[in-house]
Length: 370
Image (cartoon, rainbow, N blue to C red):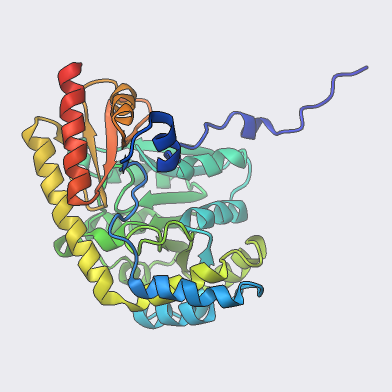
């Protein structure tokens, strides 16, 4: 009898397991600790707008109904604020869901997606799932985007160029000059994706109006944003994209699950997006906490990448996974980076002042023991 063919595709079985962080309740039970400091998933510790919480409570009355597939109210709010046509907006179950949908739309086996290294894992993983591949371009000295290498890669006409700005995990941002050079090199055969999941945390002096620059670009593009980070709605899963034209979005909705965004997420996002005062308070506080934590790590002698996100990426000088494990045993969760060349690095999310102090105390203790 002939051996049976394996059910699961090789592209899937060979994938790494995505490091999604650890739920604090699981660790609390494992270690018998009362308090867990969770700084491994870039969540917003200051929480969502109170209006969003009330909106979720109100939405509970209609949970027997399917959500609005067209996201009518939220679509209108975002379109009006950004000054874009509403039919160029796409919504998904988090911005990473949209990455997967877009890759399935445009990528064929053997084709190439170009991104930076280190990078958000799903920028590469979604290409691998499809039998395509990712070309990873390392950051330059000083954590500058490798613009010259990106220009050279674009000359080979990859299917996708995907760049996170601010970068995950580094926190670096593309400058206006960087974007101008990339757009000049990016032909119509390459889809440019700018993943702006952390854009709300960018300091005013570092901000670039990417949508204005992209408006003059003659090739296809998508900008991705999320309600998981600055808006504090990670538990509800909702993100959105702004595309170069409406036809792209129409085709995206053919691939997307018909009711991808749930009703509670829609209600919360509508209320959160409208509460600009809460967003401004939260992002200003996170920026202040980020600066304080970066300064504290630098004073301890760590090399910390400059960040405009709600996290910091720093070199422990040791095995980052071992340091993270030692911190975990003390009830502090951070994310060790596992990409080759960066295994001494840790990404730590910006927490509350008390969380950051607890992290620093635990880090000092771990390093003293080692």
